[in-house]
Image (cartoon, rainbow over all chains, first blue to last red; front, side):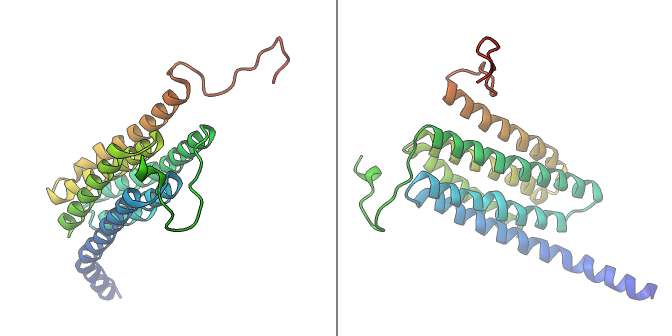
Length: 122
Length: 98
């Protein structure tokens, strides 16, 4: 039984670095996707949707990938702290941002798809 | 693979900087800067892994909190044009509340 557990432990030691690398790669891909969305979406509220992809999936995947590759427990605890901080603060910041924009009277762009963008003419 | 992820995030940061510079409204710029800060946290953490020094995570931890405080402070400043206004509405006792 002990030998079996040791085998599983060795296998996990062998497997966790590629798994962590893959998770980091997926997180980086999501970061690029969300940045392209922020750059190309037509108005503020849709850009916010694109930016929240980084705040949730991108950050979570990258932190999970880093946690899988963690050399010791202290690094794991630090990553957990970053995870908790990030997932407490980024929804709050997004909410404050949208609330400020809404109170200031920023209207979402509505109309048929492909209509001329008033920002382009300005 | 961490290096590839690092480069991917850096490309994303450049695209966000473009949006922050040409954003038509103030809120687009704040949104871009906020997302830029989140990506900075991830870059600092990944940089520690790439350079073999995961102690960088301490800096990333602090940067998370500073980023949040910065966003709220900028929003408050552009709402009230001052840092000294309280966020909660003060109740006037002479008028008996709101």
